[in-house]
Every structure is written in structure tokens, then in C-alpha cells.
Image 1: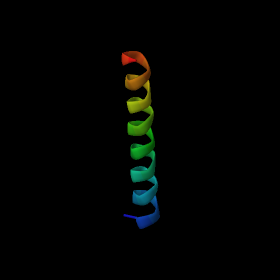
Image 2: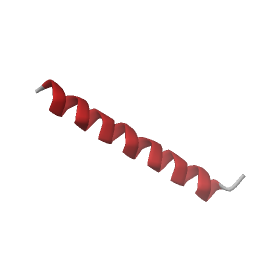
Image 3: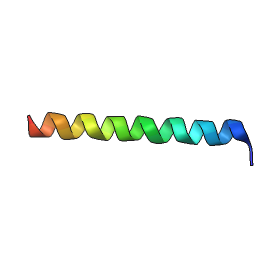
Length: 29
């Protein structure tokens, strides 16, 4: 239950969401 691990997971999750959003924008444009 490490705080650093949780923060890293959140960062990776946000990064993957941002990457997915960019792909969707590129495909729809």
C-alpha cells in the first residue's frame, strides 16, 4: 500500500487516457 506506487499508477492511467484521446481526435479529424 505504497503512496508512490499509487501515484505512479494514477500518472500512467492519465497518460493512457490522454494518448487515447489524441488517437480519437486524429481519427475523427
